[in-house]
Length: 96
Image (cartoon, rainbow, N blue to C red):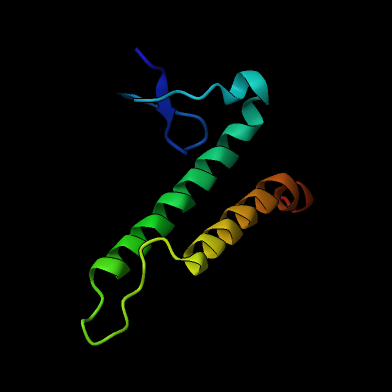
């Protein structure tokens, strides 16, 4: 059985086992697990937005491809922004 997934609430794990387990902790350390969860979260959000926009487009509009270059560029920028936050910004600014 796979290990439980990270719930995003300060390290508490859910009782639901994960379908796929990636050994980030072993390779990079536990502090990078939230970075990968946030990057994956943003990827899922952006992919859902793109899919819903693609499916809900009006017939009068020019058809937009599901995986356009603009979408992939935006997705890359979002993931890079998440990584910038986790690797630099959160080390510079602390909230107490």
